[in-house]
Length: 291
Image (cartoon, rainbow, N blue to C red; front, side, top):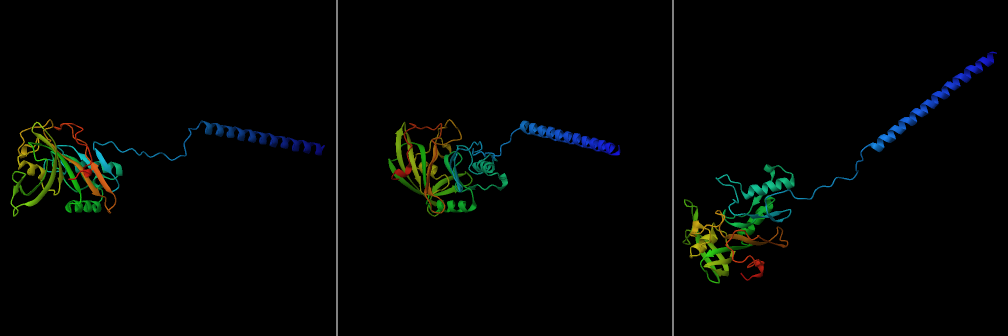
């Protein structure tokens, strides 16, 4: 009787343990099923790296050429190259804003080295350096006259078909003008030109600028009776559709990259609202000409 009672107790305990095991297994299976469903319903995430956009930021700048060292842009008429007492926004400001966006640097940390200037009412190609070293190189190239500078202008009257002007120029600070003067009082100014077309007592002229004096082209043509159309400061009586514009465009620059590598040749788009004769009259590369 004692063995039978003991056997019953053991059998009962074994049954309880078996039932507990079943419940544990079922519970685990249920939890596993819940985990599987949760993973299936979870939003899928890609393990691939996000693509980085290669698009340039939107800008009002018209960029003609850009690399790691230089940026060449189109300067519209009426816009300052560099800030002055007027406080008007300049090309230096616009280029720095663009470079700040593309580099991720703060505006105050961005370098945009201005290596030459264009008169406010003129238009065309303008060069900026991205580092002080490149700026120094480019300024030295301008000083050595190693950069070929071509301009297009529309002037009143009819200059000779081809020629060269050489004068000595001096500034009149009180009038913010330049004048032709003597060798003792002025600085040498040279240019060469080719008359491309003449219509209605106006001439389209291609100019190769040898030096870079203040208002040089404007003064040298005006002093010979051929003021640039729209340039009332130097004798033109005509106002163009854009009153802040004169018919003078820095059309093409040709120079060697820093380090003496390949040539860079950049041309300006033809400005709108000019007194052009025919839009297709001149659009060739100036280095093909003997000027």
